[in-house]
Length: 196
Ligand SMILES: [Zn+2]
Image 1 (cartoon, helix red, strand yellow):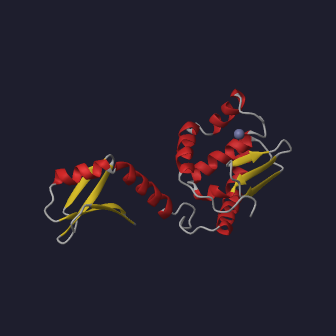
Image 2 (tube, protein in one colour):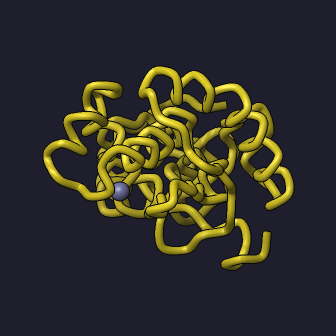
Image 3 (cartoon, protein in one colour):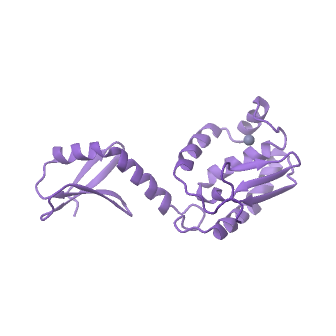
């Protein structure tokens, strides 16, 4: 039973009291982070403990979110390189023709590979390579990467013309990029470079 909640930034953490417990502890559970406390400890005491551990809490919550999310119809936890390849292929079959038509571009080829240093690449000859790890991102972010690479078929640089084209198709491009930077900090690659 959680009789009490402690606020930590935007989060509400349940506090569970245990009669025999001696020390305060934070525990990451599938539902989030909870506080375990000795019975009778004051709200203020628990609150100051939680405040001091805010960084740990934020990290644990972010990791839990990444592990548990079901982003592409398959659980992200335990996603294999083969599954990632499959979901991305299915997604491309559906979205690629739509974006090619909207942007009036025709890539020579679009392929999915294990990539370490970038999310996508577009060669001068028109081959687009997308990172396997896109399957670990929300689809809106994978979509940004796809549109970014398709825009390179018109502008093979990151100049104003390039961004104007991306922004015309994705007006919320900046928010997507900000979100992408956050996600990439906490992802672990699905496969070593070149293995798929
Ligand atoms: Zn680029």
